[in-house]
Amino acid sequence: VQLQASGGGLVQAGGSLRISCVGSGFSLYDHGIGWFRQAPGREREGVSWIRNSGGSTFYANSVKGRFTITRDLAKNTVYLQMNSLKPEDTAVYYCAAGPKTLIASMWPTGRNMDYWGEGTLVTVSS
View 1 (tube, rainbow, N blue to C red):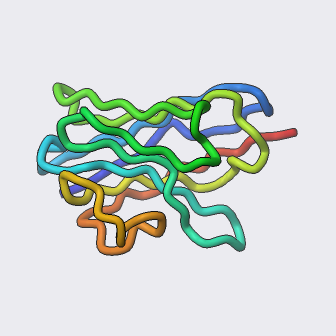
View 2: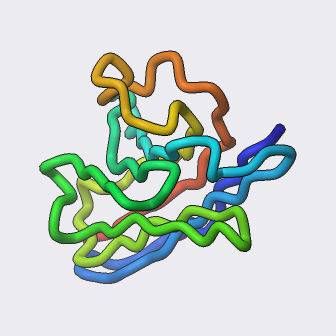
View 3: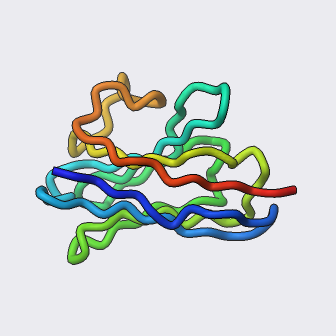
């Protein structure tokens, strides 16, 4: 069972980036998927969540209207499209698989999620 995040990089403020999370060894349809991030010196925080069926999504207030989470079940992949990026979005982004429906106690820290992927670094320059 593995989750692999990729697509991070360096982008100027106002720019866009799409990061991906590929699952292997299990089906993403059996899990809700969350994106979390951790900046240096700060606690991990939830960014976005998508239900297993893809029919429900959730966003942190700080990214609402700028980020969009989607999934491609055929590719067993979840994406996070990030637009209008700000320097404060700079962080290591992690994807994690959890229950089909988001449980309140798991947000925003990602506590007790089932699987975690290695992070991908997103750096936004001013």
